[in-house]
Image (cartoon, rainbow, N blue to C red):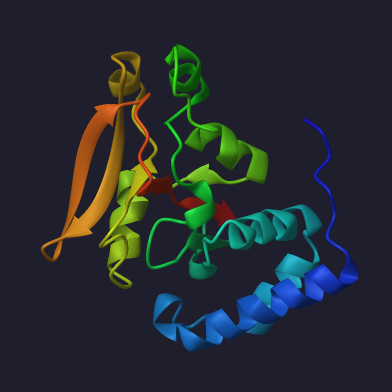
Amino acid sequence: MAARPELSPGQRQELLSVLQIRFERNMNRHEGLAWAKVQARLEANPAKLWSLHEMERTGGEPDVVGYDNKTDEFVFYDCAAESPQGRRSVCYDREALESRKEHKPKASALSMAAGMGIELLTEEQYRALQQLGKFDTKTSSWVRTPADIRELGGALFCDRRYGHVFVYHNGAESYYAARGFRGVLKV
């Protein structure tokens, strides 16, 4: 895999500032966690900081949503109110993209996520995110799809409507202006 570009000192500082402000304004997402520890971990991991920059650049508004004691990692999710604007109108994966004969989308969710160094949220992670606020009330987001569903040509996506979180299926090659994907990054 090719080395990821590094952020300039100015880009690093600007991103850390944005992340700190978001962290402090949304303490309900990460009760008991201290920003200083998150920042120290980020500064020691420039590749992960670059991935967070990509999440931010594409409209994801990443924030810490927890700490994984097993792996000793802080967990970031895209916390934008709606599916990130810069990651919409994409089909599920490369196979789906290549299967389209015409009107191909610009990219696939899985390939974009891999290029950013992140993964799509699972259904379980998506439901956990929805416990922290109201997300995707006007949009929807692809989620990681089990292999048995994908092998049959399908893919899963989620949204929030009528006060509930819904999981749906669609052909993996489909894409819509209001459907993108949310990512997870562990640092």
